[in-house]
Image (cartoon, rainbow, N blue to C red):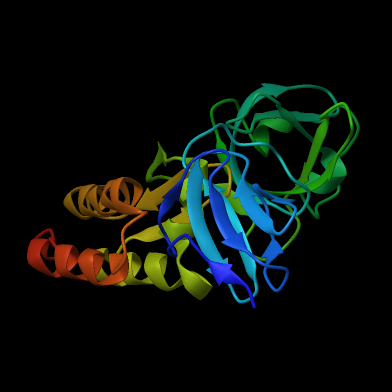
Length: 233
């Protein structure tokens, strides 16, 4: 019979024993040493059924195939766009992945996406040399117009989104803002200025307190206490 030594959502340090016994399985950020499962980095211990894993507390985003991310256009070439992925690696978006429209040879590509534009896109390929390809074809993928983009810790994105989107939906409902969260740690928020600020404050609170239990109730209380601001028409 396995014994879990660490508490769920507690902070573990490298080399710390998290569980003893063969019934538990090591997940990401952990390794097995004999009968023990140990931490191989600093992180938040998460017990998911028979698996124990660590969520890193900090670190830069590393692009992964299938991730939905928010990017900024940093270069426009004759064949596509180069995007800042908020990581050490930029991405390329080809004309065929940018739009369903036919783009004539030699067309001015800035009419579709210009320098400084933000887009919600999806990573379709990451090579061994970390060359990243993205697409704009898919549900919810689009140019982000208006609003503002903020940066959060990429490792806290799952907590900001919540289970099946519960946390971000609660923030959207409370602030009446449109919100899109990229897995690369960029968040787009569009609403009344004071409501945008409230949404940002809620996300910063999640970042600071992501390791604490009862976080959903804390954020709910915070949003209810600070209320929704509406501009008089």
